[in-house]
Length: 192
Image 1: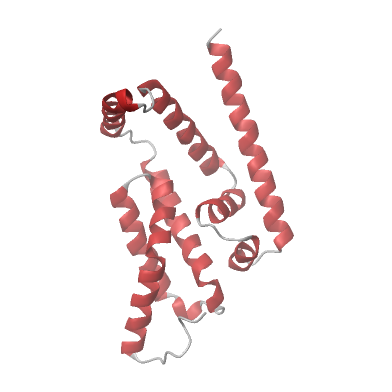
Image 2 (image 1 turned 45 degrees about the horizontal axis):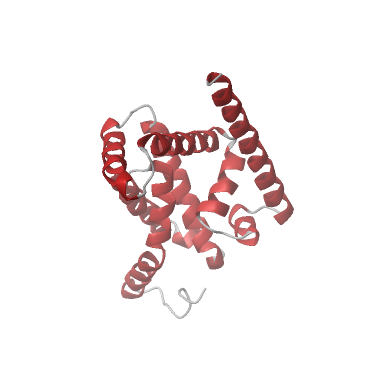
């Protein structure tokens, strides 16, 4: 990786490297964390924690080419832990804000509050289903869809064969698809 080349082990070089790495990857780490926790403050905390962990263990990373995927894996794991700790809490203020916003903007062609809530419910269900998957399935889903890593990058980051990555991704999508179908069937049955 070009970022790592040419730097010596001096403290000023290390600080420069940390600054460059932080500026380069913080946005991607934030997006990854925010998608999972859906909270700006928690996502910012996860970004900081991710880089603290990464910088403290940077010497342990043998292949610097894997830095980005390694960083996203750390962020995913921290965000999942945070989400699992907080998932029993319900933030009613957030739902009230969405309802008020959608109601005010409906006259401009935006979605109705019921549509917003339905989409939010579906997104929440998808997130819950992803978190309920076995770790090796949810991990490849996050890295592929939310960190935008290729099969090769995931393979390197997780030390897996590309075929294994593809199989896990296929199975995870299949499980999610069946879960969404069952939700649709339940909704159709409740409207009868």
